[in-house]
Amino acid sequence: MKRTYQPNNHRKSKKMGFMARMKTDVIKNRRKKGRKVLSH
Image (cartoon, rainbow, N blue to C red; front, side, top):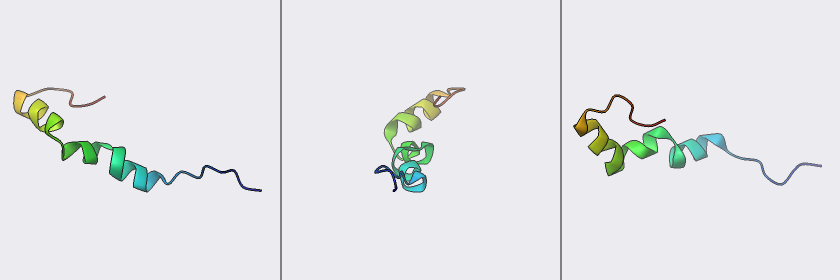
């Protein structure tokens, strides 16, 4: 019997990952400011 939760990591990374964050303004502002570390 399979467990209920079978996460799809590819889809998750599309929604929650770094590249998804790149589209938002937060990372853009940090890049503009010249931050060494953009996200942890």
